[in-house]
Image (cartoon, rainbow, N blue to C red; front, side, top):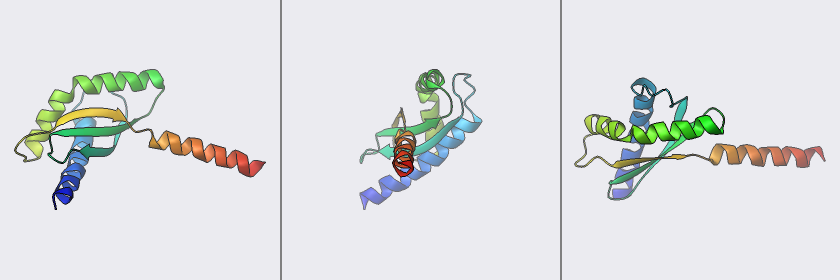
Length: 114
């Protein structure tokens, strides 16, 4: 039962964080960011937000720095939008699944060509 609530809150956080990043973050270091997933602990105290960023490696690192600096603002905005007893601590990580999938796809294409 609690797992369903965690999943529901995580999906809501995914939507709200995406909206906050697109509309309210004005930091020039933060480029085009897509929120791909949110993982919450069972006690809803810590949230890991997985992001995908367009750009080269330097732009990705600058985006991660900008997001970590804005995490307090993002947390306060989440507190206003989602009614929870305590707003979770927010941490950002890159979602490597897309790049990993592209690498597997290129390997499979090379194998098919041979």
